[in-house]
Image 1 (spheres, rainbow, N blue to C red):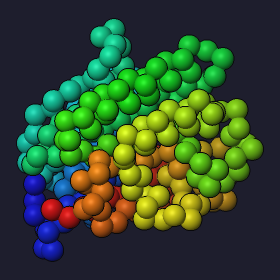
Image 2 (image 1 turned 30 degrees about the vertical axis):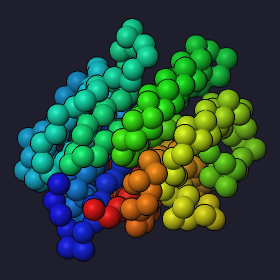
Image 3 (image 1 turned 90 degrees about the vertical axis):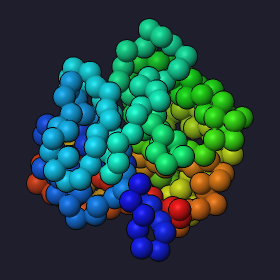
Length: 262
């Protein structure tokens, strides 16, 4: 870990919607913000451009699959993955989970299933995946291990996290069962870092490519940082960086930055 002046650490998360298409964006953003850790989701391919990240001063741990999903965690110092799949289903081959240890802290990078359409096995898989996540995190809490969970949860927690709740009423991201799973996870004693930092809502991390969603700020908040109690005590700030969503050929998500004391 790189100790910053003032003794704090910056961890960021960003669904890049294809690292091949958005590598220049990621390198630009790293150069501007220089976080200690960057969690990436939706790599959409088997490769991770480790050499390009190394030139920016980062090592890359990742789990990937052809065409879909994929997560990577960039750190200033090398880390060894503890888990490259979410426990609970050995047959699950989707690349959605990466857990590493970094200076005594568990960094958990998630790309939760979308779940649409809700009348298909995709929604069932989403709910089962979230329950597996809850059970695993419950195990970490029982051991009193400090952790940060960051990534694209594909869940809108509350109405204030959506520009128009009625428009998303029957979507898997806002269905009652999805939000119940999110609350069950939170009930393990976790802290929603952005909610604590901005209790009013109305801040979004995703804007669809369709229907002028970005220029009209018709967004939703589905990218989150959830903190174990001891890390929540060290929370300094959590904020959304909207700037990359306005770049040419942008991802439909934008980064979230978490700052914690060392």
